[in-house]
Image (cartoon, rainbow, N blue to C red; front, side, top):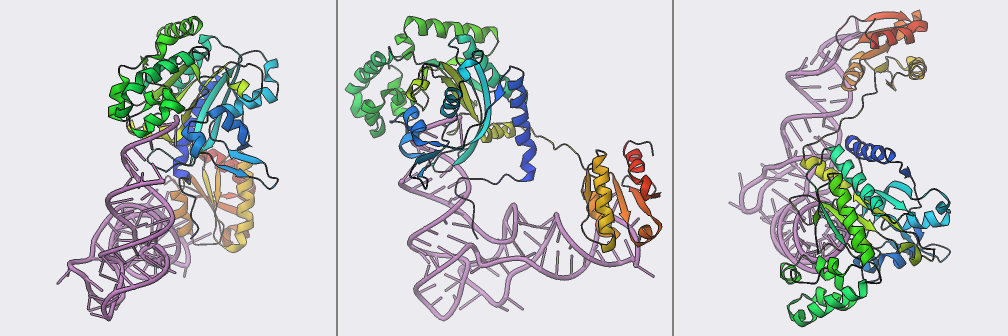
Length: 422
RNA sequence: GUGGGCGUAGCUCAAUCGGUUAGAGCGUCUGGUUGUGGCCCAGAAGGCUGGGGGUUCAAGUCCCCUCGCUCACCCCA
């Protein structure tokens, strides 16, 4: 048997209500703030991701789905949400709109990684980006959007962690300070962290190795290296979050896995922090546009994994129910009644009634069994007798008496039964 | 990419020390009612025991490989 590719998932009907709830809640929160939907191609030119993600990141080094198309171009399956949106903003001249341009998306993300709880090779993210405005209020708005989405869903115990990485002009000094700090203790670092000492010192802070983590305690803090504007930006953001009553905690070791971030970075993590704990995260990326050859465009945004949001919904025992739309079941009792049954079903649907139609002549028993297992409140039986006399048998499934109505009156009578007038 | 655990029907699980024709519940379908649902009862369908190789008189059971799931590392959402 051919099976689905590793790390992918089939989403079956019984999972749909929860997915819809997450998507609908997020969309609603976006629309309430004037964020508009955008969607970009599933494939992009590989340079878009390789140039923005950062050479030293795991994502760029080993997790991208990269391939050559038949014309020899190198393409990559979307490995993260932000760069394509920035590309689309630039390419479509969205800087001509009032700034910031506020966008949101719900999209699959592909990363070649070993599957694990809460980790997939294809996962889905809700995400939002606000482009063209560098003020800290935009950061606060974006964080508020994600926070409100979680809260509206009923997930109220995620911890918001916050940090500022400063700007490119102060980054080298911080980087040097980290190298100076860690180099003397290089022998105590694990091999991975030692490598990062030269490739990407900031990411040493991110290590979950307890021994390394301990060494990080005394490490220089990025907040102490912020330039004046970044310092002011971070201060204002904190005041805004306080005024919005969004609780947060400064995490000096929060650096994020993509290199394009500057100033604000944030993550939402559950209290019982497991390994795949981050539910959503993001930050500011004022220099990302330049990396893809465009003019300066400040931006801030986030991505949040839908599968992980769902995990947290379950953790809270929250469930979603499907909207009930099948009101009637039309049952052809003989093969000759199938055509009439399907015609009646269409008339009912035209009148706005949800209808399931039996597809083959079968016993009333089997049709009614099926009907009562659907959500239908009324069954319409059409057999030889009904065909001969131009009527249909209308049977409410709540135990009320079955009635016979003329075929021509069927739609009105069924409507009456469904609205309880009968 | 590294390491551990686990793969038996659509689902949840049995199957003695390696021993006959791999079972049950749920679900599905059909019937019990020559045209009437839910409950109940009966019957049926449904398995290359994940796949391949090996050991053995004999393998669901032991060994190897492989694929998948899962947990941890790592990484991230």
